[in-house]
Image (cartoon, rainbow over all chains, first blue to last red; front, side):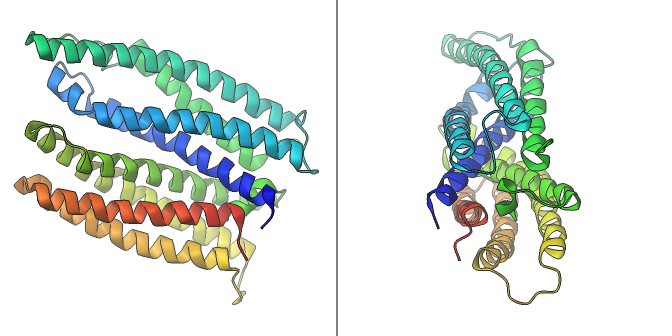
Length: 155
Length: 150
């Protein structure tokens, strides 16, 4: 095993962390769909914290080790079309995910405050909200990145 | 099969590889969610909710994803190695963790189902630990598929 094998394995493990986090967030969105019960939202907060850690590790690992591989391997260049497409999709997915995450975080904080205050909650984020559609956008972008990585169009 | 991620391969291999990788990614994410839900409960009321979530996640997401991953792996294996009887080490690791992990996932799902129905926190914890062992094995498999130790 040489260094490139290790970089590739870390790149792939990072991709699994990123997609795993998206699966976790999608499952939480389904489980909390249209809920107005703040206790239910708060119960899922440990899961969202794990998802957030995986997202950060996945975003950082995929870009760092991916770019490293593109530079290190003679077969690929950073300016190859499929590499540029992956970088653009990664940036779009990161931006969409950040917006979606901020909106879901705000809803979770509101649920926590409502639960502490013992007041009824209105949680519009947990339905077909803008946060939800931004999350759908991230899932589509990640699928496109996976297709790009496997088919490598133009390579 | 993920070794071919970093190389050019015949076009006919791409779709089976895509199925294999996507199934594996959903499997890892779903089992991670189930493990965290079983092992990280804050209050008893949360416990009931999270036990139910964990069971449904394993039954309706992780097990179907395991089948997609396994079908994809058989498909790409038949294309890449055909009838060869001399498998590389990383393929052996993949098969071993696929079958062993699948069995552990099945046991964890049964435990989670009983724990969810009868509110048994000890059994829920056992389910989480069994699923976590499967998850650890699959992480080793991901490393092996990508790094291809010989």
